Image (cartoon, rainbow, N blue to C red; front, side, top):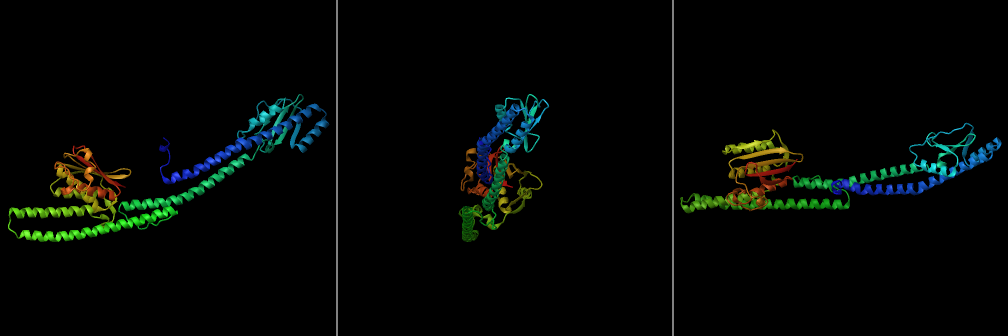
Length: 436
């Protein structure tokens, strides 16, 4: 259950790892200081002052002569630093006047009760530097003023302030240092995410600790290998396309000059099928990032263009979306992906619905149809290259087994994905999710 409340980000976790031990260490030190040292020192001080007050009180009771009492007062202030005077008026306050912030009032009260047989009253609130104690005698009462630092250990708050100050200073230094270190990791993560969406992120430079720099240089090397590999694939496919189309063109010309027979008709169909296969393979393997950079795209305008093209082909789309829906994407790739989904829906159903909407984190494009649909167990299977279903619901365009593979490849190259689910209209629903 604690995992639900722990921070999720790396920065917050590292800060917790560093700050929590500092806080725990300072808490333990504070507890030990107060529970052992300050308690013991305050108890001893209170006991000494209480004993001195009890001694002076007995001397006053045993010596009623004013001269002797005056000498006792002088000796008390000179030797004990205890200011004492006699007040002949009877009566002392009933309720002690205690400071709310003094946690050792009870300790002093207990020491006075142990040492004195007479009623007493003490005041820790009225005088910042002194503690006042009044002791009831038979003919009046004694008023004592003792220095506060002789009754209580007054260095405790200063110690606590030093602990709090050093904790804040250490925490601030740790946070600044960790922020700089985590920032390097975040920059690496942002560069990797941008590259995954088709952005080259050429401004990224490894910074931070040695391990982070090493990971950054490894990312740059990986990015260059991927770009080099994709470039080589494009060059190879371009060469294959050129080499295949040239003999196919010669075959088509040769067949065009032949008389129309059943054999030549079959050969023409085979040549057309080969052309469709070549185009399908190129469509699957084409690197859109090499041909087009991502840029601002009005998704609503693009879908309206697809709907217009579909209408000219003799089909109607039901479109539901806002007037404007902007996203950073590669237009030709995304238009091909949505067009594939629309064409699949029209191929297997009579009606197709296209909906585009924005959520908190994603833009979703939903394409529904009223066709026969497919079994839920095949939802992931149809995304694999060269996978073909039965003729009732073959989602892969041109029968090559590459239609939905191209759609998912385009979606994931933008940092998103595509998922299938049953449509509320009875057929299949394809949902393309693209990060905002």
